[in-house]
Image (cartoon, rainbow, N blue to C red):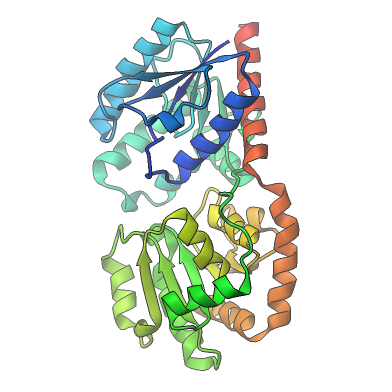
Length: 379
């Protein structure tokens, strides 16, 4: 079988959420299925570490697709040309982009529809591209995979796609995330927070992540709590303006907020595992990988009671209303002041994390590929 895969987001030292999904799932699928030939389609010369086996052939198809006009050219001209040339049986696209000119059956992975709910957070041209093409992609693809039951229902509701066409393929979490020893924990707290306890946020600093309310809630927490934990913010300042910056500038305890910027995986697992708790109170998530990373690190989680987050966290986290500052602040106080509550959530997290692994992701994505190919055989 000839399986073509859009691998344009496999970029050395630049893997983000969807890039990790592609890397972790396709690496395992390639290794488990040496009987099939895989064609990885890149928009630039790939690093050799992304060629996962002798059954993988890398194809470089210009142009580099990093702009709506180039998206269109790549997916509507370059991709169909490659698929026809290799006579692909299936095209797998893990990054929510697809080709309306795809000449074979295809599996499209849509991670979430945040641009439908928060369109104002995207540049105008990108927003128009997503909102115009994604419903067309969803209807054109033979089959769709998505990362939560919430996102599946969202795709059904937004685009009128049959639920029978959509498979739920949960994310896993990076293997770097695991419990750490007390010596490393003390060293990490000394390095970042002068030895203090800290709550941690991990993610891009954009409005959807709700840092505006997190900053306000941290101020409320520090004003009334004797334990005096700090707040560690890990991520790039993509949107450091507007309400996020204003909320930070208003803070009474802004000196207790530490910004690390982006961290490499080895460092990230240490700062996660040394935290008092993860504070992940987004307004919208299609999945929320940091929740699983925190479970794997065996630290408690505070997360939102909206979109996919209750589904992923289940009963292993404190769920809060992300629009209620006191809700978030009270949860911080509870975990700061009640060691028994922390231990209870850590134990529940140990159980919950068993439901999520990249091995399961790869197996479920392969089943989705097989279902798509079954359609191909019947057609």
